[in-house]
Image (cartoon, rainbow, N blue to C red; front, side, top):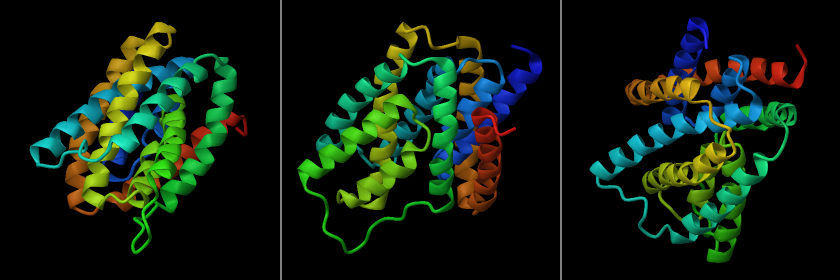
Length: 244
């Protein structure tokens, strides 16, 4: 890993931490950056989870210090997500790196759309039943275990449809991200799909980005960050798919 690659990962992790704090979808930036820094696709996907783990852990701790407990009433959400994430993380680790990079490049397009048209809480609608909630979050777990990127945006919308208020939904979201990552990361490690040097450099950027993201969110800087992410994700999607 060269100095420039390390700098790229720190800056990318910083941006992703800000994006995740303010909007969600930061992994849509960091996974392709790891690939551009020379980390093969599946190893980039696994290495990215180290940063997601540290950022999610810090967010869960912050919510708990603020008196918001994501565990309360969240069993119908957590249990199927855990099962789905284990299956998803194992399944994605079996495909070839080139195939992963192509799939991820195409997945960036709907993630970008979600970033532009961020899901809003559903108001005045009947919450999903327990069975529907479990089925939806099993699918979210499958996707989160496999790819991670953009899962927070989908999760927040699903949680509000499941009957959680927005503040609690955010706390549950970061808790699910933490649990999914705790389950998925060992799978990637055992499969040899974590490259520790770039993973730790990226994680440092993630932590710093989370802190700056909180500051920018208070000052209303989300619009600028989202524009940056959309532009970067479009460029990186084109690189992965082979458009340029």
